[in-house]
Image (cartoon, rainbow, N blue to C red):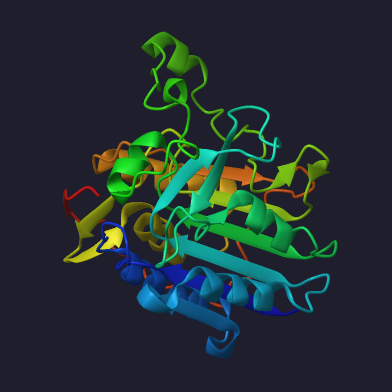
Length: 293
């Protein structure tokens, strides 16, 4: 069984506001995959900052899926800016928006990577290949302000779809407590023609939220990636359902408003993240100093 990963962390952007914790996220993820899950360094492609251009990321993703066979485990982890644009293909039937991740050379003339681009690369994977995607980025209209690079009017989300998240009353929220994981597949995972098999998405926040970039334990990191890797080091053999609950609880306890999402292809049972090589020692959850992106 082959294990391959592409890990992207972008602090420095050519045309947008910079971040501070994304390269550390890439380092943390690389260390986790090697020490807890048996990945070899030669099978992990890490790309950061000015090397993480659109073509640089896509080229590594094509390497990730090339030659994949049943039983292989593939990882794609992205830490950086995320955004939305108007859907121009007519395939986003619910919110009419394409989610995108922002490479180092991000601009609004096509130098971005949409969920359609990712779907095109991942849809050719044969049955039996497990792909795990982690996105520690912002997906909402408010995320556009964090990016500092406003899209032109023809690409911008319609005004009525921006900054319109209205939290439900407390009694309505409580009705759904414990059922947060019962969610539909996102656009990254499938299209109207049916879901792409054997793909699992972890998102750092809901699509109407932003993901925090914060000073944690003396270093800048993405809050989602930090607590994800923290809990995986403590219990690498645990189920995904338990893991997402622990990550959400840690974020909530440390004052973060984001709610990470776990979306599993219906063909996948909830098993452990990957075959663990060994578990690392337990740690104490650190105090944080808030510094939101």
